[in-house]
Amino acid sequence: MSIKKQSLKSKSVTKVSFKISKEQAVNASEVALVGDFNRWNPSSDVMKPLKDGSFSHAIELENGAEYQFRYVADQTNWFNDDEADKQLASSIGGAFNSVVVL
Image 1 (cartoon, rainbow, N blue to C red):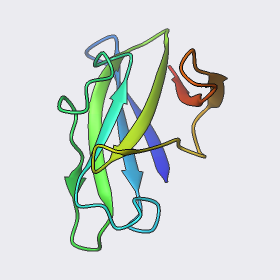
Image 2: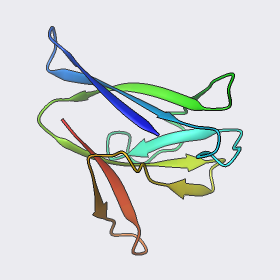
Image 3: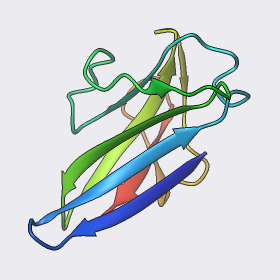
């Protein structure tokens, strides 16, 4: 997994690129990026499948905030990003959410 951040000088946002490998996606046919930035909607930010079986997606997020997120493979398998800035306990089922800090 990887998370790359690119500050945009013309705006008060950062372009955040997320990428997960084929192995991390457990050979899923679809992976979505969900979080408080899209109201945890798995239809909002579906990641692009790449030829090597990995998935990627980039979004612009406002600077000066923290965003909780997770990935959802095939709409059933939820998992975190080990390379996130931190992990926070979720209010749902004792799970944890990944966090990106801008």
